[in-house]
Length: 316
Ligand code: SAM
Image (tube, rainbow, N blue to C red):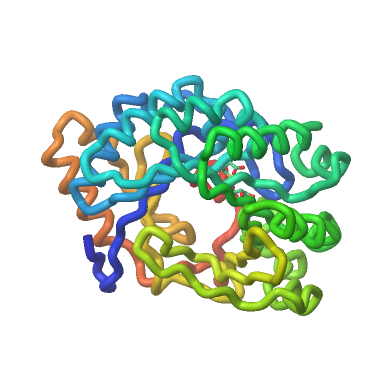
């Protein structure tokens, strides 16, 4: 449906849990526990209400979605909802090798894998877990079972993993995988972090062989990323720039949190609790419409939004 600012909102990101099996320095999961996660039934009911309001693309995220034992069941239930045409997943990849085949059978198509470094020791220091090889195995398994497209999302942080830009770019050189750099957003308890953010211009200057690629503009491919390509590359390089170049006027998304609250904008504090309406389908649909209509014109990261909004809670 069309929101109050003329944007078509058709993309729902569903955080199925706040829990995570990694502990990335910049994310804020820090041993998050949760006992108020929506059940698979409740998630299905809620997504059904969103589908009635024009949502046709759903991404499962978290926390780490693959820590939920019923994740394939959740995926299957969502993929069968009338109107849902595309189901995707964002994961840290640690459990992907075990799950990729079942996820594909359950209706998941596209997978985004978060990977900030190709160095085993650095992976351990960023995530608190010696798991780089598991992520690589997960990527291989996605390719093997035919999940597509597969994308890698990386957050570069000055002084921590900025030297990984080249080796991450080389993944797109060698494999049919898009590698996307996401600007660090101010979600840690340290508040604003401007000096740590590596902006797209800095990367493009360092790798001048990257040239703007034709943007895929269909409704499904509508993406917040700007893509670049280079001769001989099998994949593309993308930039997601919430800090240096807001894309709010193009925003087509809304977020369902793991406890049943809706977050209408990543950069706003406003949430709408849908849990009280789960037993009344009509009312639930009405509340979803209200939520979509309350989406603000733009986010406010740049004016003080910061601490205690870890993406693990929101569903990055
Ligand atoms: N566990 C899953 C994963 O790792 O992809 C899904 C949740 S995670 C919060 C989703 C994405 O948010 C990851 O790619 C992560 O790098 C990104 N992220 C977390 N904190 C961030 C921050 N402060 N700024 C930018 N991206 C962030």
